[in-house]
Length: 220
Image 1 (cartoon, rainbow, N blue to C red):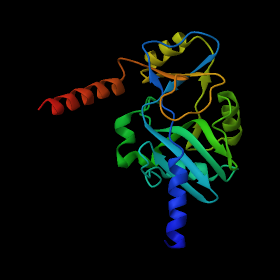
Image 2: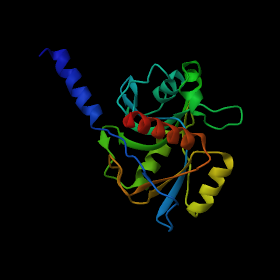
Image 3: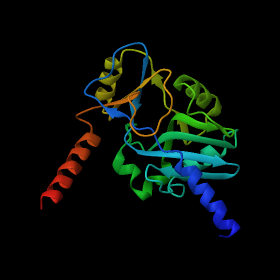
Image 4: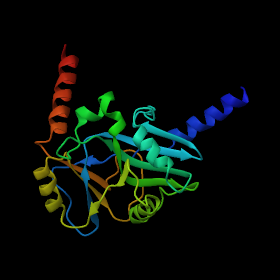
């Protein structure tokens, strides 16, 4: 194995180690002061990695999306720290300011996509996944100061989850994600992250149609 192949193998193994935390579905938001709530946006879930000058935008299935979203790439390249891994959602909004999935998946709109960042998994070479949620969010806020076009901190709310969900539905958003304070970042679907979907949102209708299409193919 050449030196180049060895470096490439190590980079691939390192990137594979950062698998996203996915929320579990629930019919309603959890109750209690130990939960915070975020608006769920209809876009592409991505992990953004930076090592020195090297920046990569990676999809849930490890696809390279760096070339698709130049505004996000430029924004994260301007951040002060030169080593980190950020978790977030790439979105493209319509004229009403609502993220639309049909826009983000259209290559023509990729140059206007922005990143809603909601977690940081590594910073300056230090793995933060074993740190409490609120510590990671505080570190992310500091990393994103001052503000940059193309990337923004995804605001969270510490009020009753039903209130946040009501307003998310009223705005036409996909729903909310509820996260337990003090929780660590774990790949897969831990019980500390819960998603409550707006049944009227286009994303939910799209997922239902995809499920039915898949079921129909299996029955043939």
